[in-house]
Amino acid sequence: RIAAGEAHLLLGCDLLVAAGPDAIAKLDSAISHAVVNSQQTPTAEFTRNPDAVFPVEAMKQTIIDAVGADKTHFVEATSLATRLMGDSIASNLFMLGYAYQLGLIPLTSKAIEKAIELNGVSVSLNQQAFLWGRRTAHDPVAVEAFVNPKQQPVEPPQLTLEQRIQSNLATLSEYQNQAYADRYLKLV
Image 1 (cartoon, helix red, strand yellow):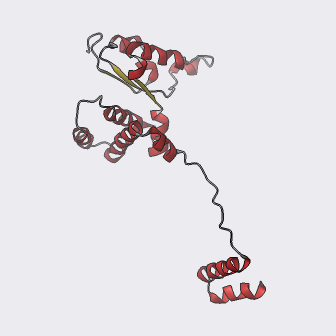
Image 2 (image 1 turned 90 degrees about the vertical axis):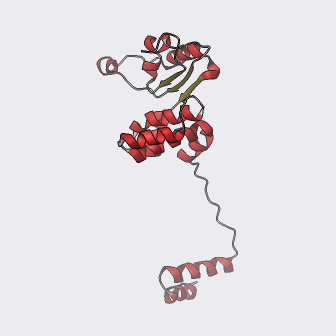
Image 3 (image 1 turned 60 degrees about the vertical axis):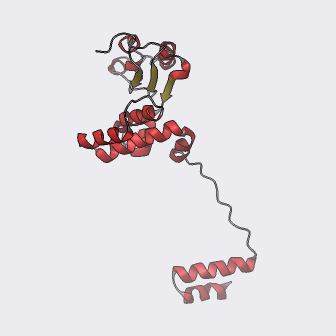
């Protein structure tokens, strides 16, 4: 129902649909922005034709050409939503939160949160998805670090032999009792 060239935002929750001719026709580089889930969602064609190609880069370029690189945002929303909330269905509200944080949704966050509440379906999940989308738009590096924390080996402090023995005594006493710690000390 949106006239050709009059969409201010392409909120693409599916890359294939977002790059399709119907969606692209609604865009105008002078006024349009795009926030698109870059997750590759296989279509029915992939079940019939195992050699089918999903031209991700070409689809992304189609969207960039329609609105401009500086106004196009691709987000791995499905992957992030699944890792953050355990359910890929959260990706749609995640995308809404992302677009909202960029200033592309002309509503207040309270209005969106109230709409989620009034809808009454998975309220907590959807509100969290909206919030995580906002956080990701604000600081994608921090969200990625939260999702994929780097395991840093913890270096044990350098202790003298006497310090190590005293530490072990305290641990064994707390673990079981003082008699157990005393047995250790006698053995050492």
